[in-house]
Image (cartoon, rainbow, N blue to C red; front, top):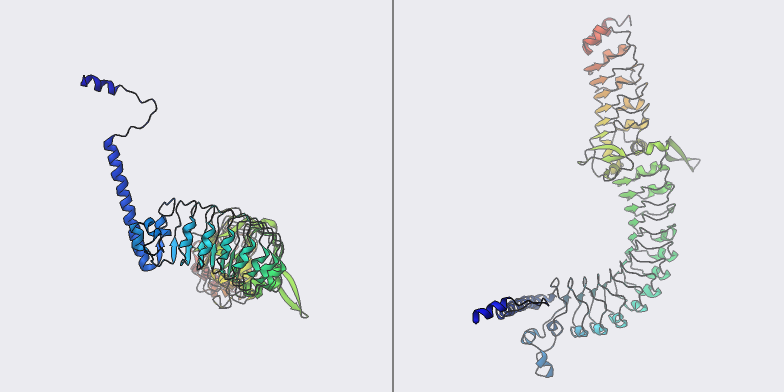
Length: 597
C-alpha cells in the first residue's frame, strides 16, 4: 500500500504551477534570511561605529528602498519614557551620537519619511541618484543644513517649507523635473552655489536677485527664453552657465556682474553680445552654436579662452589684438573671410582654430595720417578651403586632409612644436591659408632671425621650428615671400609643380641644406649674391627634368654644394659627358672655361 501510495503521489500534477516549498527548503530560506539580516546588521554596526568617530554616516550604494528607522532615531536620547519602547537595542547603543553629514545617495529611495526632521544637527544631506518624487514638510526642521544634494531624482516641485532652510550655502537640484521655482528661493540669501541643470524651467523668478552671495549659477539644459533683469543684482557671481536653452537675447543688466569670470552660453539663439561688455573680468567665454554676427569692440582684455565656434561671424575686429592674455581661440565654422594679422601679437596664444571659414584674405592694420587703414596681403578663391592642416598622432608632423575629414587633431590646436610638414599630392595651387597666415604673422613680428622670441605667440613658435617641408606633386607656381620666415628649414621639396623660377623667399632660408626642385618649368638658375649664393649651407640641389639651358659660372663659388642633379635638361653647356661625371666635374669644367663662358 505504501509503495502504491508513493507511486500515485508521483503522478499528481500541479496545474497551477505553484512552487511547492518543502520543510527542508523553508528551513534553508530562514537560515539564509537570518544570515543576510545578520550581515546587514554587522554592516550597519560598522558604518555607525565609523560615523561615531567621523560624524559622517555613509549609506550610499546600499540598494535601500527605505531609510532604516534607526537613522531617524539616531538623536533620540536613551531616556526611560514611552518612546524608549519603540527603540531597538541597536538604536539605544547609538542614540545621541553626533552626525553632521548623512549620505543616502545612489539607492532606490522613493520617499523620505517625515521623521527626517529628527536629525536636527545635520549640516550636509545627500539624497542624489534616487527616485524621490517629493520631500516632507518637516525638512525645514533641519535648520543647520548648509549643503543639500537632490540631483538626479524625480522632483517636480519643492515644498514651501524647504525655503526656510535659510542657512543653505550649496543646493543641487539638477536632473529633476522642476518646471518652476517659487519666490521662496529669494529667502536663501546665504546661497553660494545653485545647480538647476537638466530640468524643465521656462522662467526664473525675479527674486533670484536677492541671492547677493551667490557665486555659481548653473542653468544649462532647461527651456529658458530669457534671464530676469534681477540677475544683474548677483554682485558676487563668479560663474554663470546657461547652455542648451532657448535664449535669444541677454538682459542689459548682466553687464553689472563685475566679478563674473566664467560665462557659458553655448547652444542658444543669441545674436548680440553687447550686454556683457561691462563684465570686464570675464576670463572664459563660451558662446559656440549661437547666431552671433560680430564681437563687441573694446571687449575681452582679460579673456583667456574664447570659443565662438559655429556662429555667424563675418569678421574679427582689428582690436582682437587687445586680448593680450588669450590662450585659446576657436572661431571655426563661421563666415569669416579675412584674418587680421593682429592675432600674431597675442603672445600667449597656444591654440587657434579657424577651420571651416571661407577665408580669402589676410590683412593687417596700418596707421596712415593717424587713421587705421586695412589692406589685404593675399586673396584666395574658395577652392583654397578644400583641405585643413592636421597634426600627426605623435604631433611631430603636419599634413593635409579634406576639409570635411573628421576625427583628426587640427594642427592649429596642437600645443607642441612640429618637425616637418607634408603637403604633397594635394593638387594645391596655393599654400594652405592657415599656413600662410602664420608665416605672415611671423613676418610682421620680424621673427625671421629670432623665431623663439618671447614676443611670438606659442601657436606661431610651434611652426617656426619646422625643419622638413614637402610640397611636391602639386600645382604651385610661386610661394609667398612670407615663406622666408621658416629660417630653420633644412629640407625643402618643391618637385613636380609649375615653378618657372625659384621663389624669392627660398633664398632667405639660410639653414637650407637640401632643395629638390625637379620636374618643374625652371628656365634658369640664379647663383648671384641674392640667389643661391645666399644659401651658404646648401649641400644638395636637385633640378633635373626642367628647361634649364646653362649653368652659371657662379656655381664655382658654392664650395659647400656637394650634389648638383641637373640631368634631363636641354643644356647647351656643360656637355652631357661632363654632367654625368658629377658635381666636381661640372665645377672644374666651369673653372677651365670661365673666360669663354
